[in-house]
Length: 253
Ligand code: CA
Image 1 (spheres, helix red, strand yellow):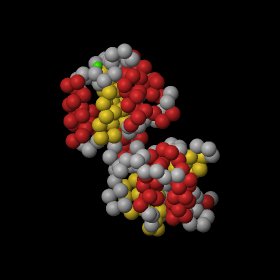
Image 2 (cartoon, rainbow, N blue to C red):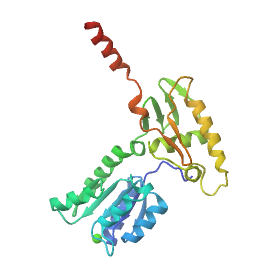
Image 3 (cartoon, rainbow, N blue to C red):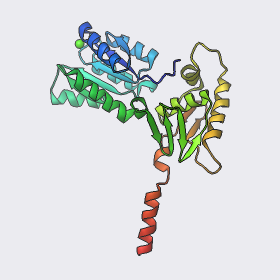
Image 4 (cartoon, rainbow, N blue to C red):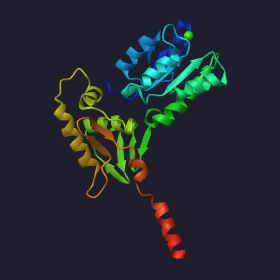
């Protein structure tokens, strides 16, 4: 199934020995690994595989890593993909240039594999908590990917397998808009023929299961584009503790 929860990493590195070492260590950590040997290939493979994170070498033949990074940031679906740059350059100005171009982190060669793996986990946790943690919580909705249980507040939400995978996909990338075709591809699998309208039917079922009357709908319909999990859902949920605090303050004055 394509919508598997295994996070994927694209390694862009022209030194074969290092690429192999990275693949070995990443696979051992449970990542699916894609490889590219130069900048052009990196852009193609990234378009095709939509990795969850990219490890990008600065010194590449033809297109430099920095140029690849810049181009990736102009492509809609790669705009938010975390990028960790690898480089032999340790200059502060280079570091800043890398981060300015849109890299999320930067590691200087030679580096320890343990450190790189820790940086990857840190970036993943920051950008896509759902990929490294079993329990994903956005606002009052919690999804336990170990037990496949979903809760909203204290309430159990019962979802069919398709609705579960839909919610999983949307919650993995809060704010990102998925077209119906993208959802068909990731949730149903590209080898199955399903009409795009089927997505609407299952989103409808998902909403019905998630939302009780008067509750805020976390799924956004983006007209002529698709669906997304509302990234403001977490912040706009009233926190009972702050409410209590307000009441206490009001009582005091
Ligand atoms: Ca290189």
